[in-house]
Every structure is written in C-alpha cells, then in structure tokens.
Length: 456
Image 1 (cartoon, helix red, strand yellow):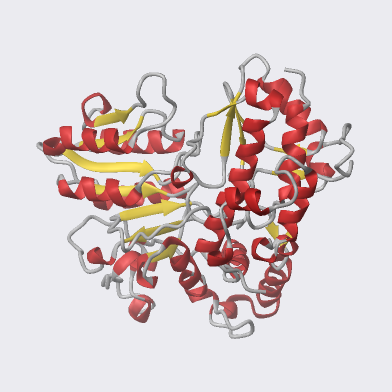
Image 2 (image 1 turned 135 degrees about the vertical axis):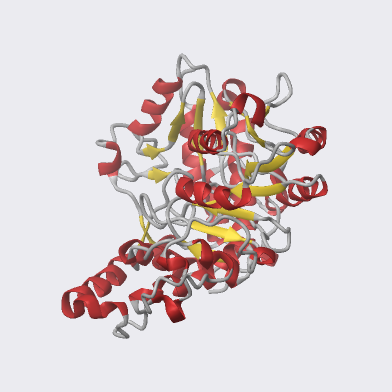
C-alpha cells in the first residue's frame, strides 16, 4: 500500500463529489473506504475500556465496548512492533550483558543505537542527518541549547515568548534569564493576542520583534501552540528574527509528526521536541533536538558537555583530552537509555511507511471534517466555540473546543461515559486531536453526534 499526499483532495471536494450528505454516517464510512485516505490503525494497539473505567452509555451507531481515542496530542498510542523489539534487546541484555554495547545480534549495537533512529527523524523534521540528535527530554534540552544560544550582553538580553507559553517552557526561560543575573521583568517579552482574540497574529509577532530589535537576544516560540492548536509560521518568524539580529529557536512538542516542517531550509537555529505525542514513542520518551549545521563547527559557543559529546573515535581513550563532536552530537552528554530508544525506533518504522506530506494532507481532511460537523449540527454550533484557527494553514491535527467553565467537567465526564478519551484543559477547553494515522472518519462522526446530544 502506498500513501500519496497528491491523491488526497480537500474535504470540500469530497463533500461535493459524494452521493451521501456530509452529515450522514454513510459519508463517514465512504471516506474510510477511500484507498487514498487509508490509515495505519493496524500498526497500533488501540485503548480498551479499561482506560475509562467503565463505558456506561452508547449511541446506536457505536459499539458500546469500544473506546475512541482523540488524545495523541497528549500521548500517542503503542506501536504493535514495539513488544518484539523490546524483547529482542532484553534478550541481548540477558544473554550478552555488557557485550550488548557492541553486539551485532540485532544489527544495532547499543553504543550507536540512536544512529539508527536519526535518519527517519531527520525526514520528519526536515533536517540533515547531522543536525538531529535523540537525547534527554524536552525541558532538559531547552536548558542545554539555551546555554549555547542565549548569550545576553548589556545591549542584547531580551527573550520573546508567548504570554501563555507551556508552563515548563516559561519556567525554563525565566530560570535561564535569572542564571545570567538578569530579571524577567526587564528581559522577558510576553506576546499577547489582540483584545477579544484567542490566538496570535504573525504580523504582531514580527512587529514585536522589530520593536525590540536592538535589545533582543532570542525568540522562543512553539511550532504549534499546545492550548489553542495554532500553527505558527516558522519560516517567516525565523527570518524576521534573523533580520533583526536575533537567534530563533522553536519548541516542536506539538509539531513533530503533526505538520510538515523544514527546519534546515527555513534556517531555524535550534529546536527541541518530545517524542511521546504524535510520534507515539511512549510516556516520558526520550526527546529530540536540532541544531542547524551552520553551527556544526562553532565551538566558541558554550556547550554543556559530557563524554557523549566527545567524538566516538576517541571517546574511549580515557585520556581526558576533550575531542568535541561536530554538529548536534557535540551537544549530547550521556549514553541515551536503550530501552527508551527502542520505543522511538519502533515508532520510526511506522512513520517510515508514510510521508509527513501525507500525514499533514490527510489531517486537513479529517480535522476539517470534524470542524464541519461541529459548526453545522444545531446543538454543537450554538454551544461550542472552536478557538483553533479556521485557516487550515494555521493548525494541525487538533481542535480546541471552548465551553462555559461551569459545565466543562460535566461535558468531559459525559464523553468519558461513552468511551471517549479526550483532554481537558481548565478553565474552559477540551482538546480533540483526530490522528490521520489511526482515527477514522466514523469515529469523528460518532464523537460529534455524542457531543450534539449533550443537554447544554
């Protein structure tokens, strides 16, 4: 089976060409049957009713004991191939112990295990292979990369982030400012949406960059915003930062495996991400990091080094003469844990079957279909506000639904009683992320019907 993005049409074109009305269950089933929209559901283990405790309600069109999972923006599902891969490495550990570091039993010696993951990851983030590393976790990587790229001086010391950045990013950035003896009150610029709006406008971001050009050291933003689902224009914002003398870095937690990115071509300075969301690499999975190869031989920047940032060829000479690795590998510190690398490798083998262009293109159809149902059915259209941008270019595979805060948890419990696994973000939002890899159009239809039946 081939997965070609070019064969996929827009959701509006599918509406126009179908003999079934877009509000009908028959239309959803027709979409699931289309070969160009085929998913990879068989590659994953789908959650069971254990996840919600007990399914107490159903609708006629849904099997009662079936869960619907719309939470890949929080944690992706388990790839089926992971169990055998993990067992294989446990067998090496059992049979060969320390010799597993150089063992060829599975063709992947532990000492260079991450090298077998990097090529696939580089394709996903649009990077050269020597620009990507699998290492640490997201916030740890923020600190490691900021140590090299946030170099404030008396003139340039400010960092631009969102007012409502993900808390861990906010904490990390403020602590970096304080570590340099500066104050967030004077060195942290918070981007705010316009009054009455939920998301940031690109022109306002660029205007802020220009206004602080003389004192700006670094811009740090998300590729896709965790709460609203807004997709930022990485290319334009990066260029604006560079044009005004700033370094530009990106948090890609909700971006990788979700939308197409071209970190190398867009001249991004550095980025980091987690692999447990859209990339389905397991809870707390090891993260990823990118440093553009224009910095590959720039050893003048501070680096928090360790023996894994030392070249492999001389690493085990143990003479304490540091021989730094070029590129992103020079930013590593320690041996990455093989058991979590196995999880990423299993995921990459699934992602190798498709392109990010396919995933992103199909996602527009699937998410667009969900949006259409929510904004067309009588009850949901009147009582739910979608704060995610309507422009398909400004979002990925997630819609953030805004409710009256008084009923938010009741709505969440109501959905859970039907076996729907969704994500609540207080005070007002429920996030739904229909994955083009494993969610179906029928699941979207069932979910919106259940929401439409709620007694608002």
